[in-house]
Image 1 (cartoon, rainbow, N blue to C red):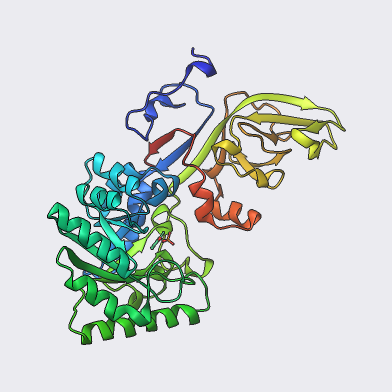
Image 2 (spheres, rainbow, N blue to C red; image 1 turned 90 degrees about the vertical axis):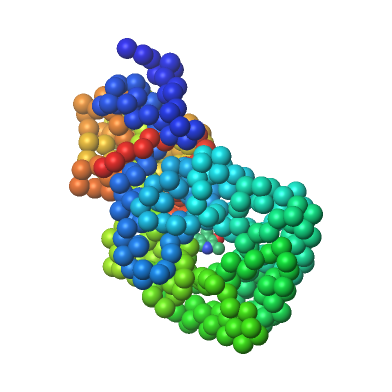
Length: 400
Ligand SMILES: *Cc1c(COP(=O)(O)O)cnc(C)c1O
């Protein structure tokens, strides 16, 4: 029998640990891990494909290491399930996928400017977003020296006030790209600021601006071969926001961008976070728990120490506000969440043993704890919660 300290699992891919090394599949003990349910991921992609017309393509947005899920495996699975594009934020994120042998088109959603970046983009066959005329000229110049051409995507700002040329100047901007010899206009796109709001006013205003810009671009003689506007929320909102491609992040991972969009498709959360009980003890009335004594026992209390903390992705601001699942039952977290460990009040499970599995995020029996539950307690969004699990915990691919 191996001790806790002896068990750094051998990784089978760069980002996923072999399931055989986990409890129930071979017995090696890990203090905490993230399960990525590839069956749920496939299910979500298929559900999303179902609401698209056959001509509309699905881009799986896999930036930030696939929102903490592992970009390579998620990309491979999403492509098999019916996605035909991948979206990343940065050049290194794109290179990681190319080095893994992924050949699907990859759109760089972020801005890039320098000659070195242009060379890397060309070398790795990534497709850049062009946000300004100046950027288009830099790309064209560098590509000419390489004797290369690149498909590029013209970004319009229709009201997000983030990347892109203002929609009123779209025609000049797109015409410039069209006429630069080393750039090929692959799409014109924009991004919505309020697609997750039940009030559709601003979203529809952005769409109207997009439509107006496209109409003027077409009148000027340029016919973009692809248009896209929708993120997850817009993809779930209405088919007339789909255009030729939808860029879906959050929904891919089985989370809904908003409550009012929950009935459109059936999504299953892909990520579960689990950890083990590492010690069980009973404390007396008046005893404080963890740094700062944010919790003081008001009854004889059985405490379980669990091997997961804020450095793993459990937000410290959830201290005393979160629950966990053990043996299919809710238990309350108590005291400050520390860097590598947290404590639970397990008084109601007197025979709890060291080594038992605790579900922090995910399902155990009848009950489930979701990233939305955490986000609601924290006043943030589920996107930020799942992105928090990209650093330390080993990932295990599962198929539930
Ligand atoms: C991140 C991102 C998306 C995906 O957004 P979700 O809300 O997660 O679906 C789509 N488009 C752009 C430009 C993005 O930056």
